[in-house]
Length: 95
Length: 416
Image: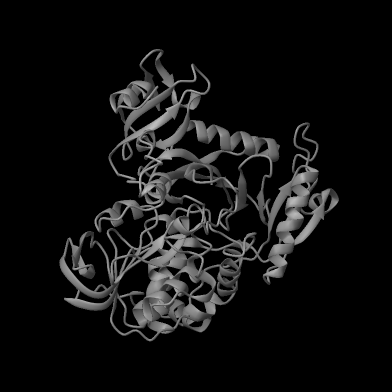
């Protein structure tokens, strides 16, 4: 697989390590009343779709940036690559 | 029809006209007591034990394609009982004991071959870990023998003992481990289940569940609605996709694992060996091909094929362990989809929906578990109680802190 890095252009997926579903960017509020349940779901449960999946890749052998890659889990086709920083900002997270 | 040597000779002399299909092809009934989704090894074994041991009378197995076409036909055929943790080892030891009598129970030749599994060690720390694991295995009724370098050399003189970085310092030998003809397991269980009245319905895809007031009433399929008092799901690899139809999210990611087979060779590898310094394991099939594999590719996938970096990685590991592999031509490589769970261990449990039961999360170790998984899932479906050796395989174990993490990796499925 080739990942089209937003800053560096097309790079071999071998340079990256994989973390998992991009929902991991949205960390629950630890002060909420249901924090224990929310963290259980956040840490352990996954949508695991067959089809388009937004996921976190880390450019370990490159510029060490985190990316959100949208990839089809049935065909391995990659349709979108964003910097995780930008995605987190858009979701209202701190950077 | 009972199979026997006498029957083979009789048929050979009379033109093979007396053989009949090994299982029927029934049309689905409107309702069953128990419907099993998934006609793989685990689903067929579950149906077989439900009918034979638990005397259930009305059972169907629904299979999207043809039986045995998924992971039971794609694995590297290894059986073993060499786990460390209490939640796992009694289960896998029961499974190995069941493999030992499987062919008599099924009257079917599954070519069970207890040729021994050798896990190599390359350092003092690994030897300590192997000794600890061996002791845990022996305490649970399994067998283990710690070999030194000379002990390994006697069995496998052609290994790369003097590798500069990872010299072979010994190994943990599990003599009762071995290999089984994987397709024959699916066919043997299917035939056995069918003889006990189970309807095996192929080309019948489950498209949804009918759930009313928190109770599962049956399944919607490509052949119409099929009612059921209890529905058991055994579709490891596609568990996420299936259970989403019941509105469930699971502690599972689907990943692709590749395996490879070489051209046929004369007998060179008498048992199964695993490399301790890379992820590589290898055995020789009865046809002569070297069957080997390594790590999963490491990203979510439902494609039954992987990518080249892992091919290179597996073959590099193989070459560093068995330099002679370099003279062998690779014949085929393929991929299968694994339910990678959050702690590397499986689930056999009820769900929060009444009448809906789940079996999955087998990571890449489901084949060896087939008999015990079938028996324990049948026990749960029939009695509503977990089987003694499968009590730890709960879906809520992450909430309660009872993870069964053999590798100690934490909630990162691609590392198990």
